[in-house]
Image (cartoon, rainbow, N blue to C red; front, side, top):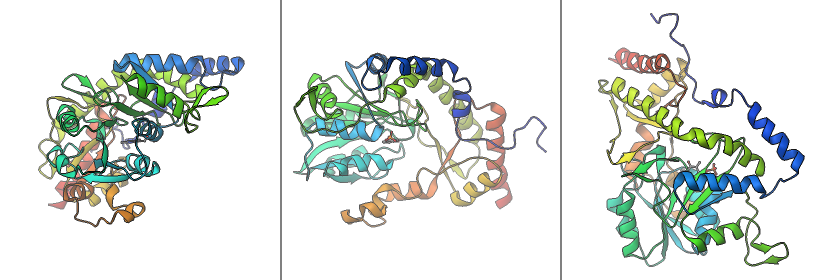
Amino acid sequence: MPSPSTPRSVRYSPLGQQFADPEPILADIRRLVASGDFTLGKVVGEFEAMFAAMLGTRHAIGVGSGTDALKVSLKAAGLEPGDEVITAANTFWATVGAIAELGARPVFVDCDDMFGLDIDRLEAAIGPRTRAIVPVQLTGDVVDMPRIMEIARAHKLPVIEDACQSLLGEWEGRKAGTFGLAGAFSMHPLKIINVWGDAGVVVTDDDAIDRRCRLLRNHGLRNRNEMEILGYNTRLDSLQAVVGKHMLPQVPGWVEGRAAAAAYYDRAFADIPQLRIPHRDPRSKNVYLLYVLFAEHRDELHAHCVAEGIEAKVHYPIPVYRQQALRYLGHKEGDFPVADRHAREVITFPVDQYLSHAEQDRVVDVVRSFYQKRR
Ligand SMILES: *Cc1c(COP(=O)(O)O)cnc(C)c1O
């Protein structure tokens, strides 16, 4: 019997706790409203400087979303309609959406059990029309970026890193998003850093890419009256920059909290034979946006967890390459068997800086009892 102090339900999102006291943010928003400085104002520049300092890059450019961070940086890298862009066969929709929105063709590489693209298969996917590689740091783990960069350099291809799920993740001490020509981050409420709506950031060390991203996010305008190139309207909102400035200093502590919670789960789940913990590469600093395990009887386990009040999720039940929207690419189930296996086996449990050991124990108990009952 659970003791009275054992929580019954375990929620997924930590936002309620994270924004329990919005007053300091609201006070700054009142000041913003009084100033009327609503677009690309002072606070956007301040936020960008803080973000670049945290990542250790020369530049950070605030945009409207993580999707637009990918779109703008790919466009800045010179992507044209008809070009091919290599990415992982399973990723969040936006990686592929951003590529397709520019008129380019996504070319998939199957995943490996770190959830990124399988680097052993990367070179075989490069063809005469390949114009960029978009590796994805899925779940918060970081893949072997130096190896990807070596292959990209050999083929003279730019790398745009989709680091939307891995803010402050690292590979051998170097931060996710800082390996390639540019890196894309999201500040959507389900990511590592959260604002009060949509927002994204591009980071780069390249001055020309920085300049082009700044033009592209604001109609291609060089100044008030001169449009240098065709662009978009995808500026980081000043209001979201205010929220972001409050969040950013807390992120290092949060990712430590997430990693500690993940390590606690790893120890607790280790002796359940129907579960498999993904490979934890010691060179990667995983920030655990998602705590994902491979599970036998995944769908039944998921249903059992939800019925017991554990907000478990599945990221993602249908891999992106098999989505209806991408039917025109002509793929069929089985083309990327590792992505297919992931779609069948993965389950995500709540993990964040606020989760208590009692809540984690409850998650583990519910999972354990599921497999015990099945025997
Ligand atoms: C969330 C996410 C994006 C897109 O970010 P938005 O801010 O939601 O547009 C892109 N790629 C990955 C891997 C993501 O998780």
